[in-house]
Image (cartoon, rainbow, N blue to C red):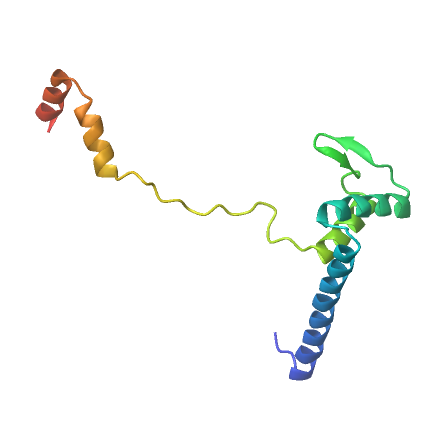
Amino acid sequence: MSLTIETRNQAYLIFNAVNDTACDFAEKLLGMGVDEAVGRALAMEWASAKYHTPITMGQRGLMLPQGSNARSAMNRVIGFIWPSESATPKKKAKRSAVDPVEALIKKINALTPAQRRRIRAAI
């Protein structure tokens, strides 16, 4: 893709404006005492009224119908103001505090003498 430097710079200016605007909206809402959870509920009410779509009770609570214009608008507004990293956060890998050699020694020590003889014979 070959874009001119002027086109890139103009696109970057638009990206900066969108980024700054989203931060401004979030700060304004927080200043009014509207956090992300309350903002989601308000966005759902707004989208329901704007697109004349009823809010229904789903398995996990109140929701707008899947695939509706109201739901798309609500998700667009929420994603713009409070962007999320991922739908499913990544879990950090945890190192086991137990040494594998120590765990194996404990298991061997828990064996009966007959089980130990069978293991030695198999080796």
